[in-house]
Image (cartoon, rainbow, N blue to C red; front, side, top):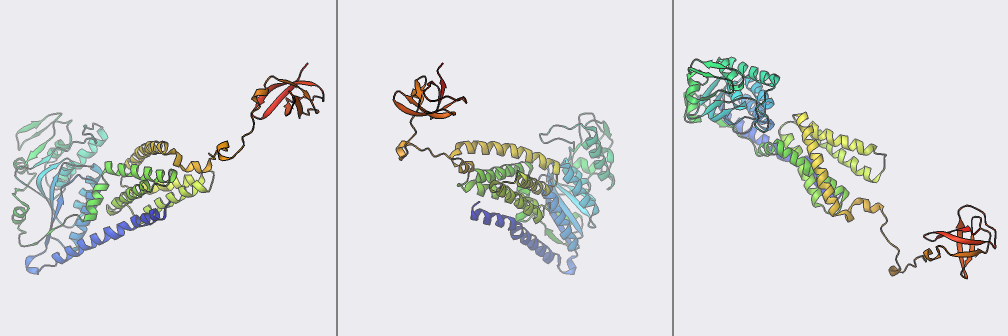
Length: 455
């Protein structure tokens, strides 16, 4: 591997410390400075956006937001919600963050609190709706949007929705029907029955009517004023640049793509050396993969080091035969490093299998196109000793096939025979032939002439 590629690898390993930590420190310092406003203004109100797909990056960001709010001794946290949902596992963790926080949370539904977004909002002590906003439609679906009807999954999710609603004095039957399309529920406040195949989605007015929202406000500022917090210090807590990058690269589809590019790039650089660009792309892809998961809070530097050890072992295996031991250890280290940085091990293993298959196809095509540059060519002698290069080729003996001659020496089994006045070195098939006997050429194999006695 080229020295500049090694230097790049070290740079990528240090990238989380170079980029991620300063961003977190600056945000924390800025927050502390704003929170230390004059006492006449009271304590701070943190305004935190929830305007993306609910996944690991958002969870990590909200963990940091709540931690900073507690440091600043904030009076309220207002989550500005506008999301179509996301992963249930991350929504459940976020719900736990809200419930366990010492600081009361208000969910301001700016546009849509759909699916897992509804669950997050229901965990807040108060919900304030923007005019025209909606909350609900929390049925469990897969990645393609197809409704999941597994009783265990549906039951667990419905129970979580009911619990979130009950914990803040809201009608649990409405929350149940937001998540369960297989039941039938009549909502007295709306004088409406939702039958099988339907899920509840409440408008702002309906949410207030059934006690799912406390107020309708045109803006966050209006909501703050209604809460009686307009004299407090308002801190808008936004994701850092590093967290925005992490959110992007930890998305499931992009994570798989980075793994494909990483595996294919490194493999091409190892087996078809001399290009540099595939190796650069591979290291950059893996660097982004580990950087994103590090900033998201799911990885430490030890996982990246484990990955580097795996790469090193594979390189050593290419030049120091170990009967596959080093190769197996290298693969185990690579897989361990990739899986350990993830939040969902099962999903990551699935992505890794897809990435390996796709990368293998890419490497196979690339190796075929540039097969003359492959590393295996270093171990194969491809030089030909031709007469054009000054080498004298051995004369072909094929014309002797079928001719007869006289043994000049005993053939035991090799010896010399006179064929048409020319001395020819021959061998028998194993039998002994005395000198003076008549023989016949029965086979010519390159320069090897095989004879037998003529009876």
